Amino acid sequence: DTAVSQTPKYLVTQMGNDKSIKCEQNLGHDTMYWYKQDSKKFLKIMFSYNNKELIINETVPNRFSPKSPDKAHLNLHINSLELGDSAVYFCASSQVMTGEAFFGQGTRLTVV
Amino acid sequence: AQTVTQSQPEMSVQEAETVTLSCTYDTSESNYYLFWYKQPPSRQMILVIRQEAYKQQNATENRFSVNFQKAAKSFSLKISDSQLGDTAMYFCAFMNNNDMRFGAGTRLTVKP
Image (cartoon, rainbow over all chains, first blue to last red; front, side, top):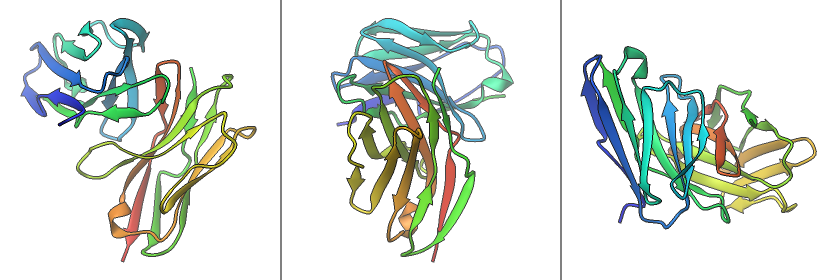
């Protein structure tokens, strides 16, 4: 049973389109994250949520909007996609008391 | 925000040998977690080892151990008896208060 699951695993879309990536965790964790991994493998935090509340919003363009309907879900919606948005996006979750973060399998987004 | 620095972009080691990956971080916090994650070509993020800052004893997990120097803000990973399956990107990470930051990564190649 997958702990953190992201869908879709691959996403190819044209510039200007709007797309969403879904993330769900069944670990009962309070905190969820979105990271962007660029072509140089650098992992940059985008957002973190704790119990549906936004904690970190790291200089991300307004075209990116996270939504957390409950603490088990953190979805990422991207408007007006640009070529530079092409990357792998990782969702993760963690529990403050233990610290360890579990990652989804990543979504490879390609904007053409 | 906290920063994490990995100064070795690439390293290689012969199978069965020992290799040490370096990591330094900058923070004013006293309580935090430190991690090493492995990312093989499958792109899955796999936790290798975890250290709580309040624990003086260095964490060990089978062939993996860390040298945690809190005053120096240093957290290196030692891999003993390297195996071909250890070939991957290795990321050092710092976590505090729902904020988890990664270093730029070290690409490790284990040669037969």
